[in-house]
Each structure stands twice: as C-alpha cells, then as structure tokens.
Amino acid sequence: MELGAKEEGKVLGCNSKKVKKVAILSTLAALLDDPILADVPKKPSLSDVDTLINLELGSAMCISIFKLDGTSFDVAVMNSATVKDLKLAIKKKVIELEQSKMGHRHIS
Image (tube, rainbow, N blue to C red):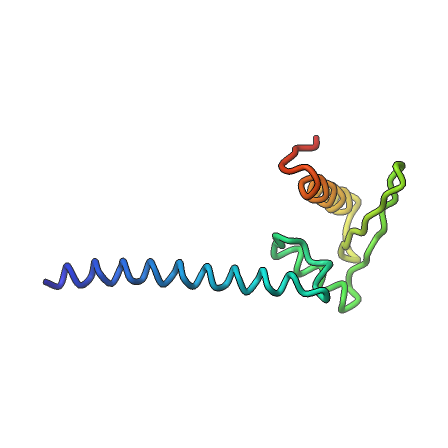
C-alpha cells in the first residue's frame, strides 16, 4: 500500500513541478513585455542579465555598432571585456536579430 502512495506522490510532484515551471515562464514573459525591460533579450541567459545589471551599475559599457547597410544595434559588454568578448557579443546579437527576422539561421 505504501508503494502506491509513493508513486502517487511522485506523479503529483511531477505535475506540481510542471505547473510551477509554467507559472514562472508566464511571469517571466509578462516581465519581459514591460517597456522598462526592453533591452533584455527574449531568452536571456544569466550572463546577459548580469551584463545588463553591471551596465546599470556603471561597470559595463554599451557599444553602438553601425553596419554598412545603414542599420545599427547596441551591444553591452563589461568594462574588462577583451576583443574576443566583444566579437562574441556582436556575433550573438547578430544571430539574435537574424532569428527574430527570419527564424533559425546559422552565421559562420
């Protein structure tokens, strides 16, 4: 009889975890729709959030990139970032912009 109760608890625990995950994701989506958080990417990573927090605290910088086709975008990097870090941030931003326009793409 205990075995059945344990299995039932696992099933209920699994459902409650899914419900909590859905609730957290819906709350996150609602927060990201706020105009104040417009600079946060739609699927932010921990490093993205950390960089944006440091940008507000003054230990990161925002660099504007102007492309030859006349468009531009901003990239936030730490003050201690290397050229490699800047290149990775630019590549990530370009991929994000291309995916938002045309869906999944890979840029080498």
